[in-house]
Length: 296
Image (cartoon, rainbow, N blue to C red; front, side, top):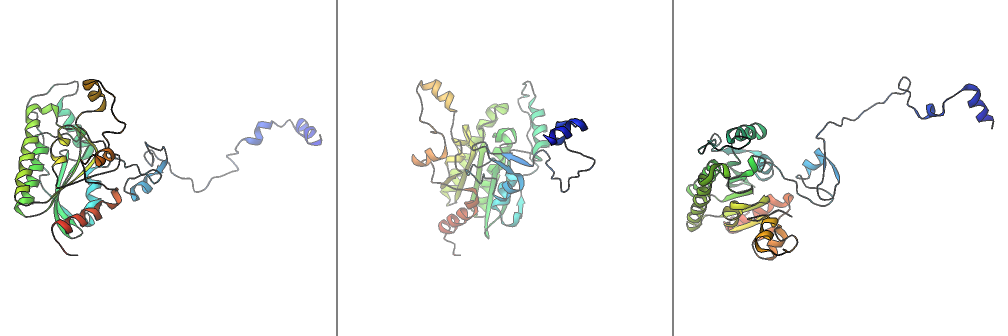
């Protein structure tokens, strides 16, 4: 009662008790929350600090969801000390069909080059995986969906030839929407070209290991992704030729849940093993030492 009389006498507004007095109260060690510092997991909705995600190979620590990563990220994970020799870097796409859409193909290429700091949707390098020299090609979905045009086909072909000439194992990481429609038949020809070169590479005793990352679809899933001597895949990766809606409309039937995910394909024998990203380098090393008969 006395407290209430004091409030009324002083005419104190009760809401003032809950207001922050910025003149007398100061905050120290204010944390910077710039845009892009935090990520939300698409699967479990956990909020993850960017540096924590990077340290965990861009994998959610709660549910092990594998975020899509760039070709540079894969190279850092796989290649020793990030030291490698890149080849075919300056090969760039043209516009052989003068393809016209709401956004011209030339503009799409220019925007993708600026966005990714890459000249194409695949990076080809030569380096070491735990002291084993390899040729590595990594597709990048952020460059026009990782689609295979004439440049991608040519760079992968050069990687196959280099591995064959230098008697090195070949590792390809796939992440692609398939053939690049903006190049029409030129794009489709690359599927045959790379597949035939891989057949010759295999016939001559070359070792080819493929890692299928999310997503790998269309002509890529129907060619280089399924031609490896050993076919690895990341967890929960989408692997298919056509999407589930297209297939359902075509055959008029409901399809098994998750039938285009890597776990389903493993059960059906389409792939050999699912590998967590943190174990990828170790798995590649074990396979190459075993299949190349290299001693530790």
